[in-house]
Image (cartoon, rainbow, N blue to C red; front, top):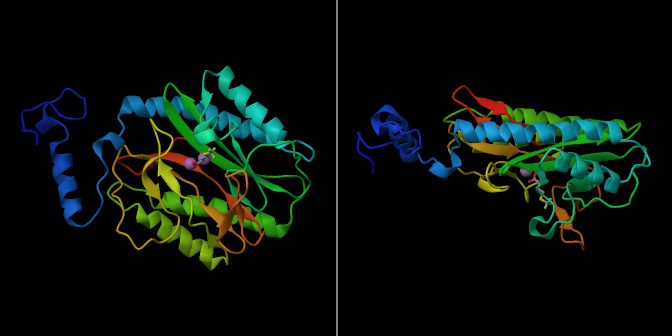
Length: 285
Ligand code: MF3
Ligand code: CO
Ligand code: CO
């Protein structure tokens, strides 16, 4: 417990009473209401956010560059090489390379692949939908985002799913505000996806991020029935809904990574990394 005249815990050098004292009192109120309160280490300062913005520039540049690469005949290994070289040339490191043994610099998830597809020599073909998920580390800061890409002419049915997943990400973002509950994100996404006749993947979610790849909180994209963690300015996390055409259930392939829909139907995902601000949120990438 800090006294009023002690130096604040946040590293500002200011007295506690002139810095985070009111903030901490405010949080106690929410704790009494049953919210989970984020640990202080999860509240990043302006210097950290600036580091994340720089990392995010690389991730964004990659996702834009990938758009120009996507066409029938291109292999996911070629996409991976672009991601790898782009990152290294700018002084970054691809976070997935060697992450718990993951062998490549991005995830490439085609059609019925939900997430964590491993780049390989398989060429894209007309009508495919593909998610490319990129995480960059720059100066110790992690930025994580993904998009869907359409390969040539794609069926209306696939386009509709891709659009729904994109809308779900926006609907999740719409729930982000300081002193709201992180559970509202999943509630809103599930309600929307279900209204469109789709399902929401339950086995993977968004996550806190910043100085680590995967951090608290876990960000569910469906209703868990929990009050959830309080969203507080300075919290950085991803929202990355995976929306399925058929069942939400999945299988993991023999490679121990690739998650596929159990019924072989399509899946789509979009991801942003954001920071909660006093006003709402800022998309980092
Ligand atoms: N980028 C993914 C995410 O959004 C994580 C990929 S981990 C990997 O959280 F090892 F599969 F690459
Ligand atoms: Co993520
Ligand atoms: Co990601």
